[in-house]
Length: 394
Image (tube, rainbow, N blue to C red; front, top):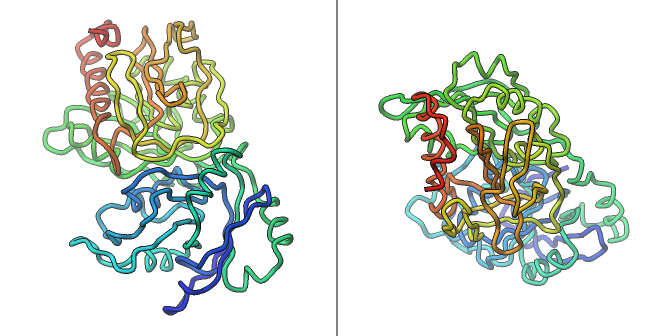
């Protein structure tokens, strides 16, 4: 339940964040006044809060910003990655008193209120982040106004009654319900069917910049739907939830692999490829979220600074090539912080994936080459090449 705040006094309304292990943090209401529940996670980005808030991958998560000052650049109408804010709740230390940016049209606090997003400010986010690093991501509730009137024991019981992220099937809740087309910019070179599991708006735009006409399809699309658009390639997007629940996307990807159509997956799509190849997935202790994660491309040896938002990972061997029903597969990218699998590729079919966001919204541009790699796969297939992936070793 969320209740919109009214009037300038909302920022002085007492609020409390309650974690499922019993730890609590007191502060002031930020955004809507009321209550909300979700999985508490932290984001290490120092910029890009607007893209974070509107990223569908954050559905049902209470996001803690580790950067102490949030809201400095206000809110504009150009940077959202979807049509709404998806985070379940928002936790910041020091909200900007007044935004300062030539594109700003309203304050972040006003935007949170308008979209009924319950938040809390004045929290020691450094202590909260250290707690989540030690104990792991966990369920949380934010309570302000009348919702905070109950004792903390009662509030804790409500938090513990909220659904957990493990076992959550969420991509259908955030995906488009109707197909739509993002036209190529300039001359159309390729057609791609993009399965929306929680896609960000900048992703099809980055493909369109490369002459790709993108047909964005719902999460429950069928193989018939995909091939009705006569695609040169198929893309599986980012999205929220536990990949262990994604039976339909896994089966759909296997049909694409059987046909040998060039395939590219990111984030949730990487986990779907892992499952389609026969690997397992597991929940990370506190996940990777931010725009500053170091990843090594094991094909080139290059280290990239990348944008992440994931709490689950693929369980695949790092040092050996695996035999799968679709030929040989290997781990193509790895996180240098903790050796988590950050990418997969097939050696005998035109398919690869990464666990992060190559569209760089917000974030660095180090990974934008992955769209070019996808284009190269489709171009190779058009020209009948059988050395599509092996040629990338050079």
